[in-house]
Each structure stands twice: as structure tokens, then as C-alpha cells.
Image (cartoon, rainbow, N blue to C red; front, side):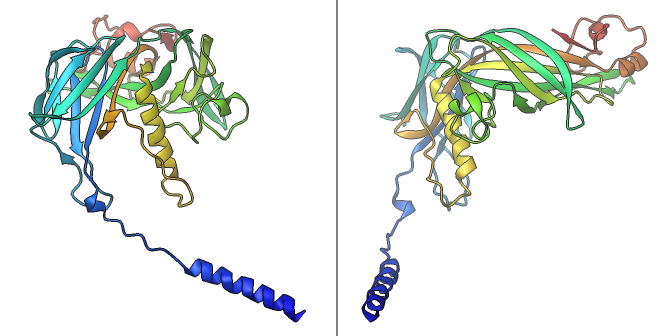
Amino acid sequence: MMKGIKYISLIVALFYLAIACKEILEYDEDSVNKVIVVSGILSPDKAVDIRLSRSINRFDTLGFVHLTGKTVAFFKGNTYLGDLTHLGKGRYYSDQFDISAGNTYSISISDGTHEEASSETNVPQPVQIIRLDTTYRFTQGERRIIVTVQFAEPLGTDNYYRLELVDEVFVPYMAANKDIRIRILRIPARVYSDNNWLLRGMGYYGKSDKFHDWAGNQFNIFSDRHIEGEDMRLELEMDYFRTDSVLGVNRKIYLQSISKDYFYYLRTVMQQSQTASNPFNEPVQIYTNVKNGAGILGGYSFSVDSIVYINRALIDSLFPGAELPGSLNPGDYFPSAFIGDRDMKNL
């Protein structure tokens, strides 16, 4: 018996000795080379707008270090199109280049003598929204609008998507000459759920677990990994329109076709933000397609459709018998083209 106790005592002693032996690793963050950080997303009919900064360590209190004095050459395929113009604070810009879907673009960043970093991306072809349908239901006593987005997922190519949902809210105000005019506010629209869990992430049974390996999906991204070639009907449960004091809401649904690099960048950003506060999680390396640097050069195209909700009572009180002005811009008279028999319609 005493022999057994001695063995147990020895094991316990060795255990405490083992955990007491710690190797101290010295790490000097200042000795790590700082790299160029690229932030730029290309899209048709938009100017090329690239931000350059320098990476910093986690204890740095100076904030972003904007890079000035760099030469940023822009290419379409292997064809040099020109240099971007530095507008200040690390912003390099040009509205002279025609960005179109189906092409590859790249940048080369240099100090004037040699290349320091580079990146390449593509702008995918857009996938068209075939139609939108709307209905509503009550969830936990709240009225929710159900928007069904129909699109045909192309066969034979790897596709990556992002849904962007924006409410354009039309707010009446009185101009200096006492005319009532409108102001348009753009507010992100919230998605609570969808019918096949494309946007929900892990933690749910069924097909959802095949799509993502993160919990939640703040960027509304998904791939065609398990839906390739399908006729998709994505059913979104969203807030119903609350328009007591506004003239109406134009809810825009953007189906973005995003580059693979942009998809994986957003995916790892979400993974990192959702695990950063847990000390037991493995650190997440943010995806980058920048050679000799960090950050992202991505691309996307999109198709868009929208639904409109009309506050008929307020419109009729402000614009009794209004004629059709035929325009919808900030400062214009509110278009009575919205007035119809239905509260919601497809544009």
C-alpha cells in the first residue's frame, strides 16, 4: 500500500514539475517587416479606387499609416492602361479605365524604381435576377415581408455570390420656398432568415451545414458549391416597411457575382471577427491575394431588382391630385407614379 502511495506521489510531483517548466519565447513585433496593405474592389461602371496603407502591430496607437508617393500601375490582362492618381491619404484613383465583366485586372505598386507589391483579380459575369415575389407573414407577433429572389445558377463554372439589400427611404421636407420636396436615405435592410439557409451558416440542421463553416453570415455571401445549375428561389424574411412618417420605401435587392478572392477574403474576415474573443480558438489568417503584401483586390458585377412600398395616405395628403413628374431624384417632387391599386409592386 505504501509503495502505491509513493508511486502516486511521484506522478503528482512530476506533473507539477512539468507544468512549472515554461519556456519563455521572446517576440519583438517591431522587428517584423511591415507590408503594404491593399484595399480595392473593382466593378463595372465605377471608377478604380484603391487605398494603400502600411501594416502595423497590434499595440500601435498611431492608427492607419497611409502610403503616399507610390506608383500604382493598372493593367487589363497583360495590357498596361496607365497609372492611378494619388488623391491624398493613400487613395489612388482613376475614372479613365473601363471596367467590364469577364475580364482580369491587376495592379503593380512600386516606389518608382522597383515593384514592391502586386495583385490580380477578375470581374465575373453577372447572374440576372429573373423575378421578385413578395408576401408577408407574422413571426412572434411581428409582421415580416417575405421576398423571393429567383435566379438561374449557371452550370459549369464556380460562382460566388453576395446579397446586398438596401432601403431607399423617401423623406418629405420643406424647401426654402415652402415647396415640399423629398430626401432619399439609403439604409441597409436586415435579413432574418432564408428558406434554404444559404445565409445563416452553421448551427442548423439540413442542407445549411454544407455551405459554410462559420456561425452567422454578416456579409450575406454564399457559393454555388451545392446549388450549381439549379433554378434558385431564395426566400428572404425581412422587416416589413414602417412608413408612418415617410412617403415610401424602395427596397433594392442586389445579387452580386463576386470574385473568388473577394469571397474568401470576406469569409476569413467573418471567421476572425467571430473567434477573436475566444482564447481557445485557433487564430484565423485573413485571406489575401496581394503578393508581398496584405489586403484584397476584388471584383464584382451585379443584377438588381426592387420592390416599393407606398404610404398612400401621406402622399394623398401632401400631393392631392398630383401629376406624374417622371423623375425620382433628391430634391424632386415625389413621383405620383408610385400611386396604384397595390401597396407593393415589382419595378
